[in-house]
Image (tube, rainbow, N blue to C red; front, side):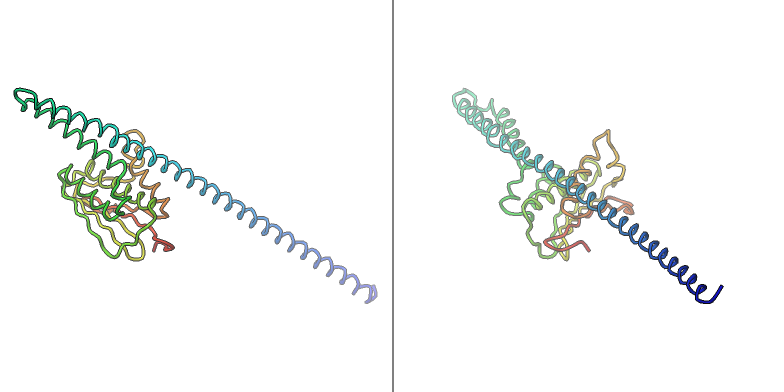
Length: 268
């Protein structure tokens, strides 16, 4: 074999190797690009699913609040109004009786019923929140829980709170309401502390000196209904782009921290 023919063979082999390498590279690039596109599509689907779940959850909570608002209005305007009218009638009739004091017990029971109706109405839809904002609403909430439960409840504000959208404030209010309610019902506490702290983010801290509770067990409790409140707390926190943390290392009592971003802030 002469040298020119040998060089030609080597050149053909070299061209073949280069062609194979180029094809292999093209296949690798195609596979990488395809996998990247598949990942992007998967992420897009997950984002759409998450957005859909968020919208469904938000719609469900808004539906609950609308129903609460309707019930609160019915209790306050209809039932409360009728009870007040009945009380006026009883008072008028009592003046015509030989012994007006005979209906004093009935009037007292009626007054207690009217107070209960008003309290339930305020619990369903806190008018203070709509009129005066979150701080005043939380202060009133703690005072009312203390008056009805006999448990000492302290509310403390740290930092300068920046107002939020009313819907977000309502969700924060519902979370605090549920946490205090859990402490009263399940923790056997004699003292509850509620702290609103504002630095980079908004933090709501609810702690008590009771027996504590296993948050994970409560959430997984599907039969007794104990986990429903914590489930709603988790859902509202997710809609607020926040997080709820339970102090699992606490040996006595319980401590729950809700942290949410304010404005364009992110949780740090």
